[in-house]
Image (cartoon, rainbow, N blue to C red; front, side, top):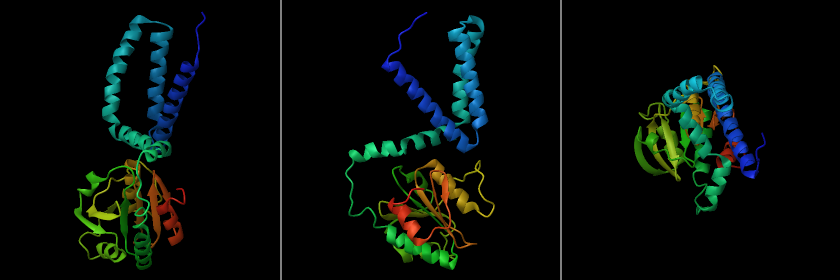
Length: 255
């Protein structure tokens, strides 16, 4: 039996393969690769039985199972689906297209970098623990509302005072957006299903969790070791110097 195969079919196959590969990478990073493999196996069996072999009885049963199973998967893996959509939306290619249509204020782009770097170096030297999330493309309003909201220019001394150990806001996270400190004492999502080194504590898990949920860049300062770590896109950059931190914040250095 002959069938036509055109450019549209090739594009269709390529898009499906690309989508499956992206889902595979995300599931692998979330530690749910075995579940993903099981779901793919069921889909392959369903296609073979109902479409290729045309077995009506078992095909009908699998049709009902797939329709109900899809809803169950959405309920069970709502966090993973949300992270997948966040990762897809924060992809560099999409951000590039978005930037073509967005007016950028280059004069104010990097105002916050110098005071943040200075504050981080001072706090690391004094071994003052800190957690700072910097908003990128994805809005962080839902996390800002979990803390004490205020609008203040980014200032090194203000950052150090907020994270001073006797400050009532030092245990939470600070969120910076649009060259302003939007809130402090905020609660960030904790990464539970990711294995991190034993020497890293709750701050690092919160920073990693935030980087998985959003495209934010999160700075973590260890109170025990006085080291600076940056979390972004589910990855850590550890033991950063002032120059390396400045390069990451300005986008000159990739994570």
